[in-house]
Structure formats: C-alpha cells, structure tokens
Length: 453
Image (tube, rainbow, N blue to C red):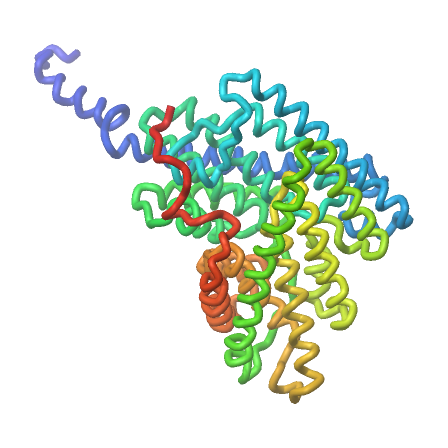
C-alpha cells in the first residue's frame, strides 16, 4: 500500500476486480465459453476414440480394417453370416449383463437419451447404462449390423460433456449449455458438419433459439470440427466432384420431394414394425442374436448391407453404379436396417437414412433418363444429394438440419435451392401421415421438465 493511500479507497477497486474475474456477468460468460471449447475437444476425442475401437473390433472379427463393406466383400458368404450372428449374440450378452450391473448402481438401469436430457434440462446421464450401451454398440457396429456408428459416438460425447458439466458448472442453465455443446460438437465431429451440429441442437434438442446457448454451442462445435480437420481428416465426409445444375433441376427436385417424403415415412413405419415384432423376444441375447443372424444371412447375398453404408453412398455420389444394382442394394439395406434396429442393436439409423436417400435419388434419376431427355434430368448425382437431404428431413422432421448437414457433408452448396425445395416438400409429406420422427418432437417431449441434480 502506498503511503498516501487509505484502506477504504481500495475497497471499490477490489470489489470491481472481484466482479470482473469471479462474480460478474462478463466473467461467467467467459467461463462458459472457455468450458465450451474444452467440451468441444472432449467430444472430438470421444468420437475419434469410438471410431478407433469399432475399427479394432472390425479387424478382430474380419481381419480387415478398411471399411465394413470392403471387409464383407473379402469374406465368404458363410463367414459373413457367422460374423454378424456372433456379433449380435455378444452385443446381446453385453447388454443383458450390463443391465443387471446397472440395476445395482445409484441410477438403476434407466437410460436417459441425450436428446431427452437436453430437452428436459438434465445432465444426469446414467454412467453404467451409457458404458453398457457403448460396449454393446461396439460389437454390433464392428461386426456388420446395418446401423450407424454415429449415434453411439454422439451419445458418448454427450455423456463426457455431462460429466464435465457436473464438475465445473454451478448454475443449471450452465450445465445444460455444456451438455448441448457436447451434442453439437459430437455431431460436427462425426459428420464433419459443424454448422449442422449447431442447427441440430437448436432445431431438435431445444426446439427454440436459446439466446444464451448459441455462442457456446458455436464455440464447441467449431473447436471439435477444427480438431477433426487438423488431426484426423481435412475434407468433407463425402469428397464429391462438383455437381452441375440443369435448367430443370428445380422442378425435378420439387417433384422428387414428394417421392422422398413418402419414402421417409415408409422407412419410419418399417422401423416401428421391426421394433414391435422383435419386442416379443424379451431376452436381449436372443433378440440381438436373431437380428444378427438374419442380417448375416442377408449379407451372404448382398454384402453391401454391412455398416452405415458410407462407402456405397460415396460410390453413388461419384456415379459409379447402374440403377438395377442400386435398386437391389437399396431394398436389401432397408430390410437389414429394419432388422438391426428392430432387434435393439445399439446404433443409429441417421446414416442409413442418408444411404436410402442417395441410392433412391440415383435410381430415380437414371430411370427418368430412360423416358425423358437427358438434358431435362441432368446429372443423376444431383438427385442423389437431394435425396439424402429430403429423406433425412422426412425421417427427422428437421428440414433445416437436413439441408445444412447434407450440403456440408458433400460440399455442394451450389445445390442449396433444389435441396431446400425437396426438403420442404418431403417434410410436408412425411408429417401428414402421423409417423413419429426419429428423435420425437422437441415441443412435445415425453420427458418431464426436471431441474438438474
């Protein structure tokens, strides 16, 4: 203290510093933003870690590590059936044993999905059920189940974010913000689509534009995607040559949106039918084992049904296949996804929906070119991109997210207008039939609005 200063004169200054660094609104905002960046990094690590573990299971089961369809093609038909069946039984054993273990824990065996948690403002994701479902999904995904690995990736990213939120955040709204940041960052990392991750949580998880959540979510998603870009793979998920629009592309996309909307609604109906059929089998081991057996038998004839369909979609977007082959693979993939998802295999149908849209769009374009002038139809890859977005909009009832995600994943932003038109029509068609979307309705969520623990 200087000789000419009085103690009382320092009190206002100390209080101002305390408000700035510890208690002030600016300091709280900066802290949330900082933790949002950490959340993004953790979510990216969770996604990369899960991807590595699935590749390890794939190599253990097939001796290959270059993609599930490539691995399936390298095996004999009976070997493909055996791998799927064994994977289903092991995944069922893990799920059944893990459920017994979870019942002994403080949270019981009830699993809280990350979407329901975000909508209800909760961060108490069950540690034991999350671990159980993650391990079970590793064996399902790694042995060829017709589901996406991205769903478990995002669930794991959300769980890591929820654990962090319970450690560092004090206010309930801050905890929920970090959870939502983890979801957005997980989606951005899994699909190489950071903007789509933000739109996903604002359109599906929250159901409204939460002012205080936007900046942290942007920070988390950008952090995660930057790490993926710099450390893993510096390109879009689907590396597609530019697709050129024809003068008639807008009209064709508008009409095709009707078909894609009906296709999305039909896919939702089949998934629900599959779940109701397999629900008669109460034991997870038998249920998942039967699902694995049926998918394995199907893959003996059509090995392309293995996995989330990434490699097939990539080939479609490069225009590599004729419509007859694509139609056969599309039918088999829909059946396989219905069986895998219906049996209770832990994984998503988000990416298989992209498969359905891409193959259906390419088939539609190639068949139309048989009857119409080629100049009217244009590049078949255009309808493949449009189909991916439109079917996704139909099954999620989230057209904004579908538009942004597919354009980001394919880097075909010049197709924004036809994609918008098709998604709008497909969304309108799908919602008219009363089918429940993949993630439910964010406004009519069944979860009670409970405070954070």
